[in-house]
Image 1 (spheres, helix red, strand yellow):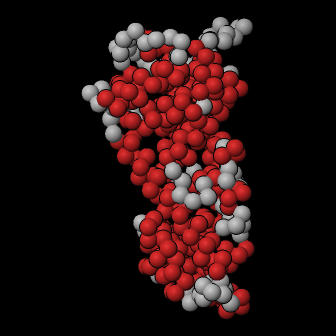
Image 2 (cartoon, rainbow, N blue to C red):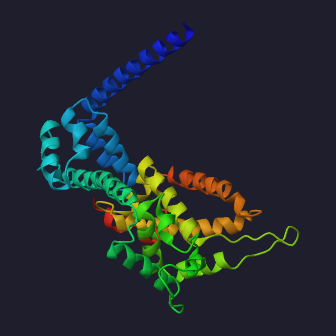
Image 3 (cartoon, rainbow, N blue to C red):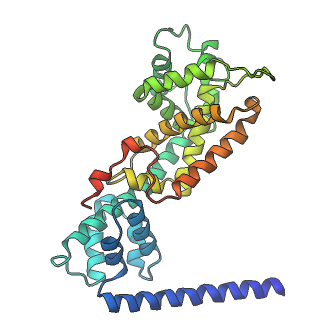
Length: 317
């Protein structure tokens, strides 16, 4: 009975607060002459703060047309903006900047949803040793990380030198599918100096004076694990803060891979700072690192990769 009463009270409070919120929005519109979308665009600077407010406003609208506007095809965004302006009775000639601002926000919102779909598709695609493209990417990973050490055979213990568990890396990609390979190759190809340094550090064990235990880890396996971390940040929506601040339009797979590079580099530094007893503490260190990233992403102005920030491109949107 107590449980039922508690649930009943919570439901009543929900509808009461929702009713009050709609009344408040109505009063504010009458006083300011502007709808909620206008107030957000005019009072909030471009970036995650604005886009996330616009997204919440559209999703929370009582209009189905507004609710579905966050999931339209990218080619339909301009038409969707016209529909929103018409529905809200906003004259585009008097408010020309509003359409530009809404379009920028919708490009980011729709782009993020599409990025989740694209990343999920890669994650679900298994590594196929019979696929020439998959094999080519795997060999490229070796060449980028070990340019001066030719691979003697496709099936070889040499793979352990870059952090795989056995003589055939394909078995290590089961958890993250092709997504893990895509990220590792991107890191090795486009951030080569950092990737090679992280690999070198991971192969050179540091010893404690007392315990004499190694602090090394398997580079490739950790890369696949950090891919999982990045994937979960993306799917949970936590990366919206970052992507809405760095992508002036739709966030792409490249943005996701750049974020992976950042996370790999930062995790390596974090691992060294944490000074774990041994590799058995990996899950503890990873979880602590995950919580730190989540905390950073709670800041609406956060950009995990400052050198990829698009603040200049966002100024006039």
